[in-house]
Length: 272
Image 1 (spheres, one colour):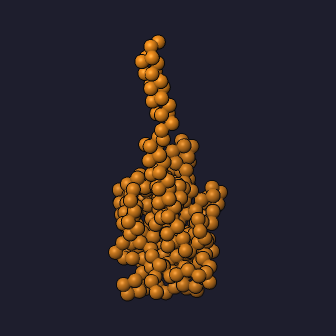
Image 2: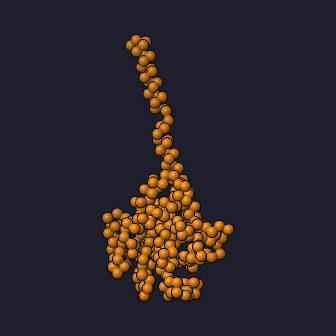
Image 3: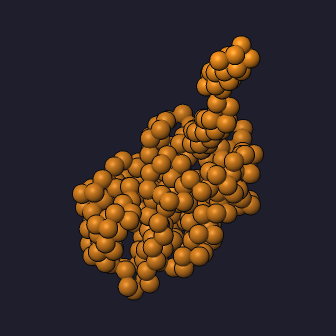
């Protein structure tokens, strides 16, 4: 080997060593983006005003519990429950949205509109990435009101879980008819929730002309309120919609009163 050949070999070896020791910049950029994305999700979770009704990083409902969101038609029951669902999805838990009134496309639109309003309120970057990350954890199921029953819900859920398609940790049931005798199916759903460690939320439609009973509980729940762990009410007063706690959250806790913004359908603390 000549001196020239030897020098060339050393240069090539040096170049290989430098290449191996050089920081992997693309990987660093990807990791940095991932860290920022994780921090973004955590920040959004912690800033959710609904968290003020519970403890940090905890659900408002206990495991196995059922809750209700009460309001007159058009006040914002579905919007509030979608926000409860989004908070759960951001914490990487699976949510099943059962609608007895609206088709799948309309439920999807509800979720997307509330999410985008939330993202816009907080000026979130990476909004599309965040949305795409929670979609696999959401499943929408529809029934006709007259075709809904607890055995049918359990059967469809069993099909999903046995095929390893979807296993919910929280269920929203929107449009359940609370007129008439509902104690038996609610008791069945309560037992189902407890048996599978679920959290189930119901929307309950109230009426302007009906007077509430003791504790502000409306007639729809007056004989069955003992089945519910948490009851929230949306109460319009002028241009404001107040979120009132009727049951299940410590009324002496030091948290600000919450409002639902009719324009964005988002929950926010009332400014003093």
